[in-house]
Length: 527
Ligand code: FAD
Ligand code: SIN
Image (tube, rainbow, N blue to C red; front, side, top):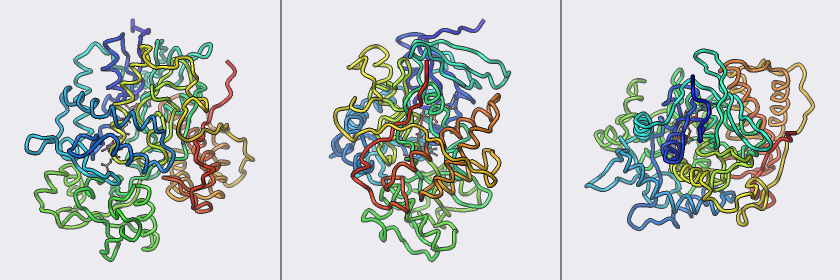
């Protein structure tokens, strides 16, 4: 008979889930639920590394300044201060646990990435940082008492009298349904790149956590901000494999079809400008050239340097007939990272008692409107630790609803929103499938948006929501979650009549002071 009651139920087995589990095991029984194999997650693919202010002359203050600047006025200062101050200790813990970060002359090697004023990116295996982290943590979990259930899809958060107490699960191998109960339920379900036709994210990244939280009555926030990585491999028939920003940190240059370096035309930091700027610049260059990719050129560096620093990228390109030590690689932007998510305070508490969130699924506004490169892995470490502390009663202000405007005394304001009922579209809506959803999102809710296309998308999504059958297996649950999240994203993008960070509206191309606030969506649930 399977044990069904745990102190901690953690949904997700990326860095956020595994790290939380390893920290929580000292305080009670721990169950990890994960919908694929343990290593099926975004974490495995992380390349550039983890940002932490460890180098000479660097400081938490400088790291904070860079993070706030990239976040375009929507970072929560307290969250960023926590991230940058506590980050170095959490990274030290990863080193203690055995993650083999690269060194140079016996010191941790620190790389450079876009919009960082200092070299502060720790990496492992050159560009295989995520793989080293995931396998190291998974090995530690395997040696512990933590229970891991693979192929276990969380389908619903169970709530009673305003408190999350359990999780409904579909065993996707046997089709069996299970119910687990937990004192603390932690969503560490990662991002949602699969909402888009072109993405760096693996198949599991379908935004389930946001849908689970929203359906359970928790608040979600900042969903209009989705980051597009500027440089994903772009070749007919090949996946949108990431060509790390660390390449530009090491001197790689973006060139147009004529071979001209163009980034200096767009930003003083040229190739190391913030990601939203680089992605829009590339989209613009692609449009000028009739839609083809631009080129990422690192061929001026010594071949052995490139092979040693970027072994994964080098091998991937070779498999596709391209030697990056001799020629540039075709690249285009792809959906990469969800800045918004389940609204969480700096202790990982959501607006629903008993429910916590950390990692990419959570939104503490630490990244604002645009995440700084390599701050995500750091975010997962820092806030996973804080989730565990808050389950032990260490968080202040117990009893304050962290989702309510005014809970955080400083930083941008909050605006409450609910899903608007739209006039339904009739004849022209495409049939719902994962692919048609990805096409809709790529065309209408991508790097450049406008009110007309967003409104049409909102109507189509609402129609799909109303007419789709009840989910019963993994693909249909994922699709239902993606449609709900897409709808929340579109409604948020429609409401935000300005351009800021990763959200660019051609009908409102400037930022507006009036919009220096977070959009928080909840649904009314009678419990
Ligand atoms: P994930 O690692 O995605 O894990 C989520 C887990 O939840 C998965 O195990 C998934 O199967 C599980 N899950 C989801 N839904 C359910 C459900 N309903 N039921 C059960 N299980 C579920 N960030 C950096 O800081 N530095 C980098 O260098 C970097 N490089 C990147 C490169 C790539 C190609 C990508 C895609 C991302 C990169 N990022 C990087 C971002 C970073 O990797 C992610 O934000 C981070 O790994 C997220 O960790 P996580 O634990 O929150 O989510
Ligand atoms: C990259 O290596 O370019 C990805 C880094 C990140 O997403 O933080």
